[in-house]
Image (cartoon, rainbow, N blue to C red):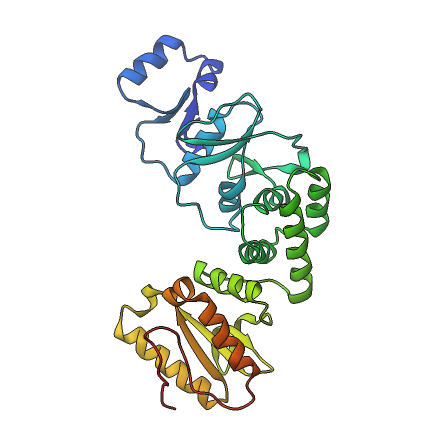
Length: 308
């Protein structure tokens, strides 16, 4: 049973297959059953994969419970796993949260709201998007829609039905998801590869800047953001991207070749977007409005032009 359940079992399951209470207590004393939640155990050790932690949480929440929200999105592969070890489930209203569990009271989950992935009961992709809408930014939600589309998990009609079933429960979330779906239809999938790209898209949307193409091909490269009519490119540099001289040299070569091809290039670091978002937006807006060639510009300490 543990082999089929990512290394975890529930006490109720053991009793159902004929393992007596005395045998369970003996295995607990010998540490062959390791408590994870009340009545849920790892078999042999605590070193579980994330799927084991997820299923343990669902088992702990009782019959009918499902993995939900950010953890459900991670199981579906449309967002990264949350950093918190506290797992989110949707369960009966009488199930109490614990230091290891976030519990959302079940609100008439239909069969269409449920799925099973890797043997783990979970909210369906459509219901997961509805649940996430109130807690994600618009950029994060658009990126999640884009990844769901890329994985073949986005069915707009199913999302619309899930929205109707939950109407009135998450007003601003429903409006945000509807707007994100409209943007998805208009602009296509927002396929973002990092939180830094999500942060930049959020800044673009919040500042009223024209929406760029994201991760777009240009002059033999893939750039983070492109405004093709203005021939403006934005590249985003996380701190991990510039720990090595080789990476910095590649960036300089890329910038030089883009500029030689007639594109104006802006580079921003993570700190620029966090500490000076208004300055970043103003810099992009000035370059988009300008008609002539402009030197590469960055905010903060990195104000210099790479020679062509």
